[in-house]
Length: 362
Ligand SMILES: NC(=O)C1=CN([C@@H]2O[C@H](COP(=O)(O)OP(=O)(O)OC[C@H]3O[C@@H](n4cnc5c(N)ncnc54)[C@H](OP(=O)(O)O)[C@@H]3O)[C@@H](O)[C@H]2O)C=CC1
Ligand SMILES: N[C@@H](CC=O)C(=O)O
Image (tube, rainbow, N blue to C red):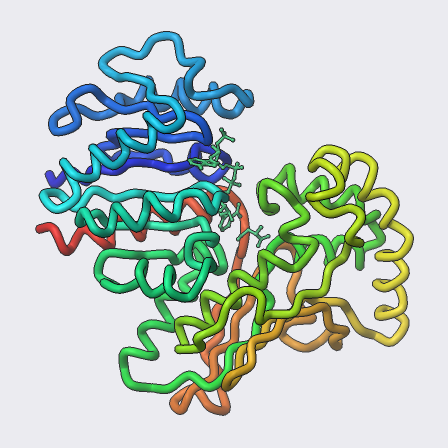
């Protein structure tokens, strides 16, 4: 049986859901790396992986693990240095997978070094791909070494479908979609008469939101997904080129208040205004959807009032839908629809990417 070495960056909701049966040689959280002592022969055992999940879901740090067995903890700069050592040892020889399930932009440098050392990269984290265009070029310079299906539409095969259409020589002229599981869920729950602050907390509890839900409510998370798709279609743009509509005001932003303050005190202040917007749309037979549109050189995201009975208007819960128009799919678009957020579907997308890449290393 083939064994696929993996180093997991990020052990949050998504990372813990991987339920990995791969040879996991290391796991990082924001401060530490836990790695096996003998990188070439050993792996993190199932019991230890379960213990890690327990510790991380209780909110503790990896470094609080008591019984390390044949492993070692590395902290801060030592952790980053050790990841590079592991990548040098296993990158070219085994195609070690660096699986980034964090929500951090700080992993970018590590990933670029990993690529230079022959590693494969799998991302649920959108931030490395939505940094400057030159960084996107670097990460995707050898498409055989990178997969990032879970960055758009969680486990839905959005990127695989787009790359397949493009590689058949069929030019894609337009993509339109609803790409936020959180905003889709929030809007459809509001349509059912629930209160904004309550449904945002529910979306967080269900694992749909980003670690900071303002990334979703401020439109940045959808903008990042739009940017990844636009870049795949050849647009040479950056995040600043995409205008976003935010559901919260500037004075509730990350520079002004903490995530907890926003959730507990900021959100209730928005209940009335958001509820009214939804009611105004409903009075005209419409619903609100956060729409992403990529066409020609345009890439836009924003809140729109849409008829209840159009494909985007009919979406319920955390479902996403993406319509792809090309020469072949001109009048009848290629449509991908289904659960667009959640730890389990996202982790399934990451696992499928890891397995897919290994064809290179038979
Ligand atoms: N949930 C979903 O539906 C989907 C999520 N995604 C993406 O998956 C990613 C993970 O989401 P989720 O699991 O909910 O997030 P969590 O906040 O639950 O977990 C993030 C993990 O990453 C770790 N981390 C943070 N910074 C670093 C760093 N610099 N180096 C290594 N590890 C780091 C955190 O460590 P610590 O525990 O110490 O804080 C934590 O373990 C996000 O990028 C998200 O956009 C993509 C598609 C869908
Ligand atoms: N927070 C995101 C999760 C997937 O990227 C969303 O709500 O869609």
